Image (cartoon, rainbow, N blue to C red; front, side, top):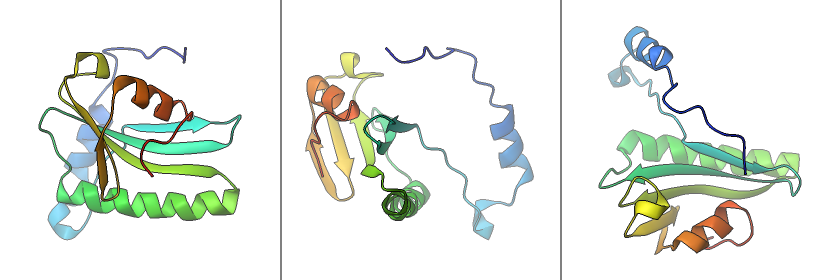
Length: 131
C-alpha cells in the first residue's frame, strides 16, 4: 500500500490566491493541475494521469497544456533515461473504479474501455493497455 492520503485536508487558499491575483486567461495565462504523477523509482518508470468523473471532460485549455506537458515529459524522459509511459486521461462513471459502471482510458487520440483489473495493472506499471 502507498502512503495514506490526508483526506479533507486540502486547503484551496493557494488556488484561490493564484486565480485572483494572476492575469486572466484572456491574456494568455492558463492555470491547471495534473491529478497524478506516478513513478516506479525501482523500475525507472513514470506516467501522468488525469481523472475525469461522470460527464466531466477536458477543457480546450487543459487539452492544450496536457499535450504540451506530455511532449516535455517525452523529451525529458529521453534525456534522463526514464521509461515514460505517457499522459493518460481516465474517465469513470463513479467516484472511483469500484463505484464505476464504465471506465475508459485515453492516451493521445487513442481511447479504449478498461476494466478495474486492467487499470490496476496499468497503474502498477505491470502492463500497458493503451500505447
